[in-house]
Image (cartoon, rainbow, N blue to C red; front, side, top):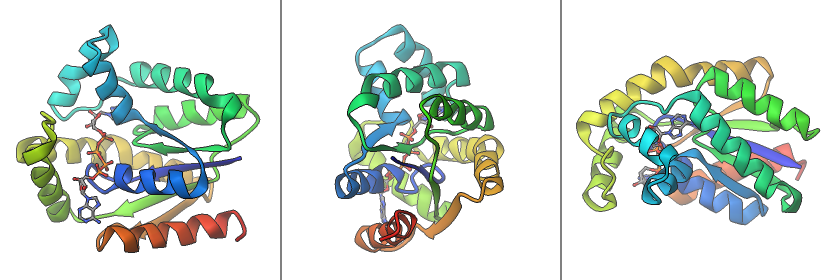
Length: 193
Ligand code: B4P
């Protein structure tokens, strides 16, 4: 099994690159952001709970996100070769929970790839996306809050996996194709190709 985490600040290209890697390596894509937006679109109690946090640029509470991801893993597990986690884990508690979920399935995270992008570039991308996405959290004001949440709550996830010698950083600025190529080099190395 090959289990990867795409890590990085909001707007660093996790979702963009995950879609490409999923196709290349035939993995299952689990994006916490996409799942939360799906819950919102379906107006479920979970989606209603998540909405107020997302709109404010805050992280959704751990218990909500961990339960949602655990269900998703259980639903998909029997038919997959591995997973790309995109946007999850986003707190140290989520990382611990994910490690436990995978250990119960006799597997683990193989690699965490961190996309490095400057705050200026992140802001520009998110504001640009906001013109077409219809996402209420894609505004210049919310980006500041989302970045603060990343610095305070999400960076410890990198530390968690650094201690396990699983963290690799890749420059997330440049053309989307070049970044996919850099990520693929890391993954190929991991699977011994
Ligand atoms: P996410 O859906 O994870 O959103 P994101 O961080 O904005 O996206 P990403 O980094 O994937 O960027 P993308 O590829 O789209 O989270 C949204 C919210 O959900 C969070 O704020 C939080 O409230 C909640 N949430 C999600 N997961 C959670 C969790 N685990 N715990 C708690 N709360 C959680 O790229 C962004 C833009 O840049 C796109 O427009 C793209 O086209 C462009 N782009 C990408 N690569 C580029 C490049 N190389 N050059 C130029 N532009 C590029």
